[in-house]
Image 1: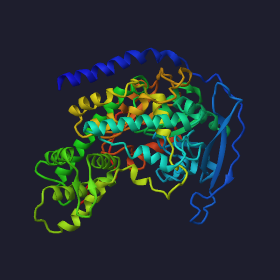
Image 2 (image 1 turned 90 degrees about the vertical axis):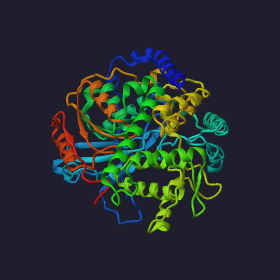
Image 3 (image 1 turned 135 degrees about the vertical axis):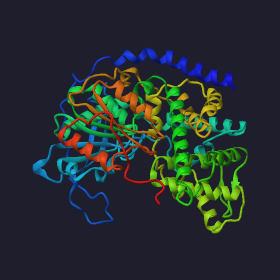
Image 4 (image 1 turned 90 degrees about the horizontal axis):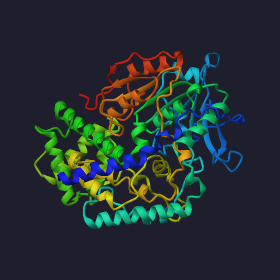
Length: 528
C-alpha cells in the first residue's frame, strides 16, 4: 500500500517537473492585441416556445475565428441569448454568464433567477455556449448515437476487476481515435484561452467597455484567465465554485487527486450532518452513519445488488449518484432515502413501509450522466465532446494509459469512495488526438491586478471544487476577496439570501465584499 502511494506521489511530481517549465509561456497580459469587431446582430426570441413569449429576450450567433493565429480565416459561431435589462434607465451594461463544465451550455442562463431584481434591472443577462458546446459548433467525435453507444457502453465508471479495467481503457482509446477521425479542425482549438478570446470579442460586440461576468465551477477558470489576459478590460468578476488555476494548468493528475479528496470530504460531512439530523429527517441516519455507508460501498465492490423491480445497482451507478447528489442540498435527503432503501435490500429487516422504501433504491441503479442518453434509432449524434475537448488541452496528463490503474489503486487509499472514480475520468487525455499548442494555453501568471477586486466564492464542503481551491484562487489572483458559505453543495449564488445581497452590491455598485465573511445557506438539507 505504501509503495502504491509513493508511486502516485512520484508520478504527480514528475509530471509537475515536465509541465512546470511552461509557466512562463504567458508571462504578460495579452490585452494589447485588440481587434475591431462587428456588433452583435440580435433578433427577438422566445427561450421556451411552448410558453407565451415574454418579449424580453434576444438571440444571436456571433462569428469568431476558429484559429486566432489566422483571425481572418475560418469562423465558428457562438450562440448567445440575452435577457434585456429590466430598467433601461438604470442599465449599466451586460452580465456575461458561464455555468462551467467544461462543456456546460450557458445559452439559457440568460433566463436564470439566481440574481436579485436590482441586478436584472441593471444588466442585460447574456448567456452563451462556448465554442464546441451545444449550439456553438458542437465538437462531436461520433456521427451517430449508435456509434457512440458502441464505445461508451463498454466503459465502466468505477472499474475494479482486470477485465473491467482492460475494457474501459480499450474503449477510451477507441473514443479518442473516433475524435481524431470525426471532430475536425475545432478539436485543435478548444482551450480555455480561446474561450476567453471569444468572450473578449463578445464583450466588445455588445458595446461594453469592460467585462462584467459571473462564472461557476469551470467557469471560474474562464474568469480568472480573462482577469489576467485582460486586466484593464475587467469591470467586475464573480467566480463561484473555484478551480485552482495554477495546479489545473500545471499538473492534471495532482489536480484530479485533490478533486477526489474534495468529493470525499463533502461525503464525510454529508454523512456527519445526516447522523446529527437523525431519522426520520435523514432516512439513512444510524449510530455510525459513516460505517453504514462504507459497508454498502464495500459490498458493491464485491457484487452488484439486484433490486425487487429487476434493476441492478452497481458500484459505478452507486458512486455516480452519490457524487451527483452532493452537488445540491436539494438532492441530499432523497439520496439518504435511496441509501436506506438499498441498505434494506442488502440487509433485510422488518420495517414499516419497507416495500415503498425499497423502491427508492431505483435511483442508485442508474448512471447519473448516461440516464440522459436516450434517442430513437439512427438519430444523429446528439451529444458533444467538449468536456474532454477542453480538459485535454488545459490539463496535462502523462501519455500512458496503463498508469491509471496504478493511480486508481493509490488514490482509493485516501479517497475510498471517489479515488478510483476520479482516476478513470482522465485516461482519454492520455491519447487525446490534439494536445493544445503552447500559444493557445494560458498558464499564468495569475496575479495581474484588476481595478476592482475579483469576488471569489467558496463553499466549505463543495464536492467538485473543494474549498482549498477557492482559498488558493483568492491567493493566486492579484486582487481578490474570498466569501465563504457553510454548505455541502457545488456553488452558492442563488442559494443564500445573505450571499446574494453581497453579490448585488458588488455587481451593481462595485462594492468590494468584506473579507472573512462566513455565510449560511437558506435551506436545510434535512428539514424538520
